[in-house]
Amino acid sequence: MTEQKLRLHDTLSGDLRPLALERPGEVRVYCCGPTTYDDAHVGHARAALAPDVLVRYLRWRGLHVTYVRNITDVDDKILARAKQSGEEPTTLSARMAERYQADIGALGCQKPDVEPKVSEHIADIVALVERLVANGAGYVVDLGGGARDVYFAVRAFPGYGKLSKRKLEDLRVGARIEANDKKRDPLDFALWKGCAESEWGWPSPWGKGRPGWHIECSAMSARYLGHGFEVHAGGMDLVFPHHENEIAQCEAAHPGEGDFVRTWIHNGFVNVDKEKMAKSLGNFVTIRDVYQRYDPEALRYFLLTVHYRGPIAFETDKREDGRVVFEGVAEAERRVDYLYAVLERLGELAATASEPGAKTKDLDAYAKVFAGASERLAAALEDDLNTPAALAVVAELAKTGNELCDVAQKRKKDARLVAAASALAGAGQAALRGALDVLGLCHADAGAYTQRSQARRLAALGVAAADVDRMIDERLAARGAKDFARADALRAELGALGIEVADAPTGSTWRVGVV
Image (cartoon, rainbow, N blue to C red):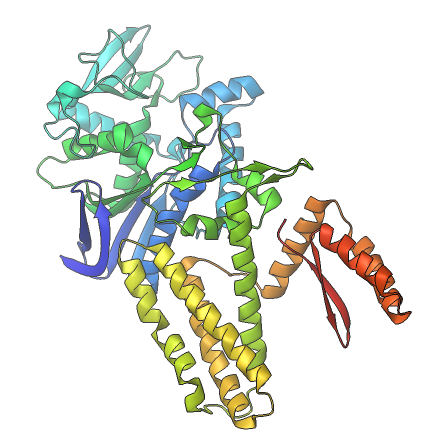
């Protein structure tokens, strides 16, 4: 077994531990994906982001990663919502799964190597339930009419409660644990739910039915990653009962084979008004709600500003004109704008290089920042994926790159310095681009980002680009006629709309600021 410099906070042990690998150079990662009955909200975005950063980091460090994130497309919530909409459950879940994949893809999350759906793994689930029954950890309850339930006997698994640090005698029936007189113990949970022949379900040794929620992830992770894989990720709300039950199922099915998972990582909640964002509380903001106002990269940046294990406040503000503003995401978009601008400036400066490798001691401090960035970024992420510290490295690189461009502009008559700055700009751009790649930021072409962000901001303002161009032309005409009062009034009018005007000897340009 080998260890990496990466240290992760393991929920099971409660300690910050080096990542232990069963096989050198190989890491297996599983993330609990969504239950696809509705559009995903910002909490789902955060749950997908933490393992994405982990996988990006591991691949950056040269490890081979197998990343699995499931789709729960069989669930009672899906059945209930399908009845409301008049759709077939599988049709509804497939549609919502596609929307989730599009939303998370836009967030910059890489596609998992495998994205299994519950509906496509019923045979694996049935086989695992059969194994648990054979091992004495599961038992069958006759419901009559040919239907039967199968339950996991919690007290048959001595380690139950070790992940959530709960004792059996203190546990109460909680979320997604149904109390009924068919179970031997109120704490026992469903492995298989029998149903009538007319209902949505699949054939099994216990009659027609559907799998319980917890058994689904156990079966799919075992199918693709085996027993004892390296990292299991998910939201903090899944620690109990979902992940606790996964442990019980998998370790009861593989007695004597060690821990089901080597390291458990859980991301903190997204809070609205100090409460967890959740559909059950009705205080959720969908990812698509955010994308209507802000660029997906802004949401990603915002989520990265807080360590994945801590809570993050997602506040909304309704302005007098009726616009809803997510201020944290708005500020993040300003930072993303700046990063794209610096990348573009560095690229333009590097393109003017006439003496490759030209150097001057005047720029040694800039070169030092660029050269040491990779090491500083690695140190930040090796410390339990400390993305705020990683963003600080990015900010330092951007600031240094911007200052380098300023120096080259201010001292443009110093041919020796300009040549050295131009030669160094390429290294600065590569260092900044490399750090951003690891964090999944600024992956678009700068021109494409500007075009899409400007179009969205104009739409949010309800202003047409042609109208702005007309006002700019009118202002230029006023300036030409020395009607500066009119020119200033037009500039103020544009500014009130959030449109920034820049004057240059070649004419005036405009851009829409973050709104």
